[in-house]
Image 1 (cartoon, rainbow, N blue to C red):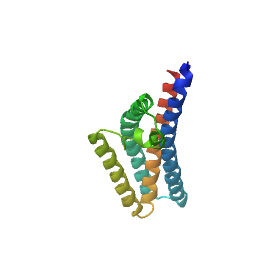
Image 2 (cartoon, helix red, strand yellow):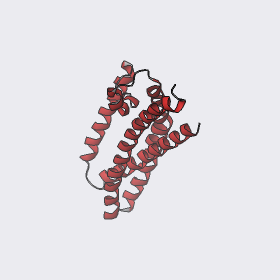
Image 3 (cartoon, rainbow, N blue to C red):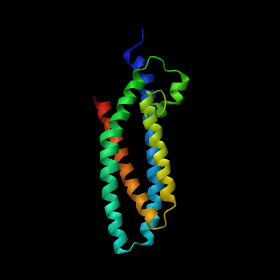
Image 4 (cartoon, helix red, strand yellow):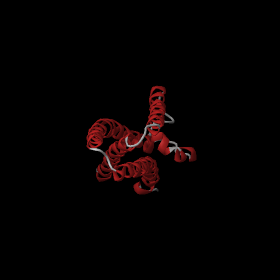
Amino acid sequence: PQTRLARTFPRLMLGGWALAGVAFALAKAVYRLGARALETLYAGLSPAHWLMFAICLVLFVYGEGYRALHLRFVPKLMERTEQLMARESLGVSMWLMAPLYVLRLVHAERAELVRAWLAIALITLAVVIVRALPEPYRGMIDGAVAAALSVGLGSMLLAVRRQLAA
């Protein structure tokens, strides 16, 4: 007979892989955007630009980092990870798509799929718009987004720690 650990270890690995995929994507974005923002800051900002950057930073960290990522995204991500680990069938395709599954981009109800893919489209549109901005505005927004994503990544890591401790 299988032990409890033997039965649950593959599911823990699957949940870990799914969350690691999401964490890697967030960390990569923080690194890339943060590097661009640092270039902008090192190039120097006028006092008015510093004020604008501070305002953007506060708005993005609160609105995107805390409200959107910490309060909504991370709890849904953890819930979906639990659902993934509880699934009956864990074939190769489920292992390959685990990060997409927890992001509700595959194997979700129609409304969730539409919402998730619409969010991807809107994020892509925002990236295109911000890339078209001149410096220092692009760098300031990239810095604010990197800070907000850092809040989300930290929130996700804390949620995983809480889940493992439970």
